[in-house]
Length: 122
Image 1: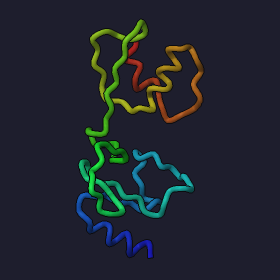
Image 2: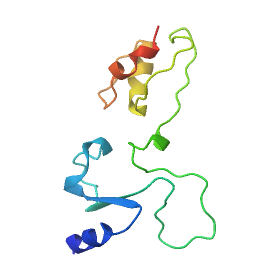
Image 3: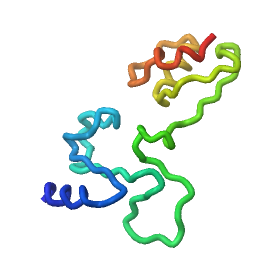
Image 4: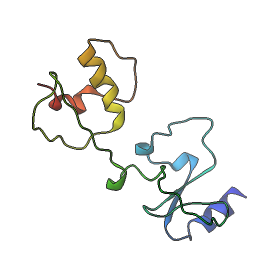
């Protein structure tokens, strides 16, 4: 049954779908036992809905994190940060080790890496 649903979904425009064992590593699902058999992601500016809605939502999440429209803006000001500096894109999980570093704390193990963001520091 899963294979037949998957094959039908692969034909649908404006979505990408994967079987749980085929998910790209960049999506960070890992081997979570709660991952469903098929994962579907809509293209940017498209939504997946269970029924036709009268109103379209003004914001959403869950798009592919490779899409530049999904990248966040990071502003920082203070004695730890360089002035008038523009950093390369980095992921939100890198903010936690950055803040822990500034506060002199030992961060818990996460997917974040201070090496990806240390360029913003003086």
